[in-house]
Image (cartoon, rainbow, N blue to C red; front, side, top):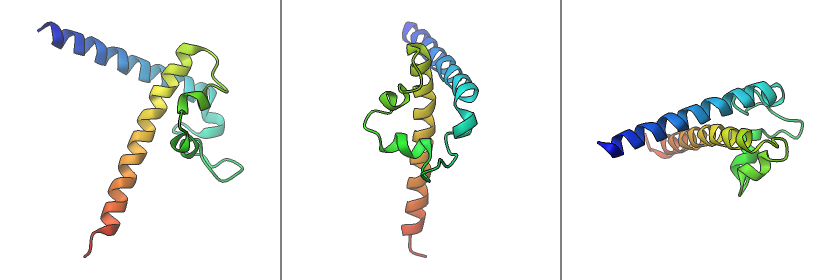
Length: 100
């Protein structure tokens, strides 16, 4: 019972952090990167692509986000986007590899 309560609190805290990250990103970053980091930049890449290639996405985000709480929140938000993108690309590539 106590572990269920701890998991629920942890989940609630994670949800709140993710929501804060989205809010910060939309307010401060979306103008140049779109809400999900998918806007093409002058070099033809997107923020999501850059973060996916990075060994340390949080360090890459740190160049613009100086507040540690905001940085952590945006990192959690962007990691969710990266995870969804990675999952979608796996599904897409496996469906292309399946013979018909």
